[in-house]
Image (cartoon, rainbow, N blue to C red; front, side, top):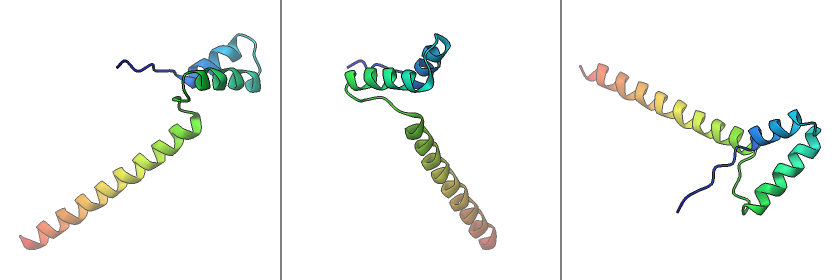
Length: 75
């Protein structure tokens, strides 16, 4: 199944460049997203995902550091 990728930020920016104000551009992009089944990510969605990914990355780094220290102590 082919998935349609819809860059909401780019779409809003294009509409603003064409003369829409922010609210109008976001409303149009929101309506298009709803028409696509609501499967579009907003800036907030992306920001939350980035924050979650950063937390996971920090957890991995901390765990790696802990394992490295444990190995060094064993040597």
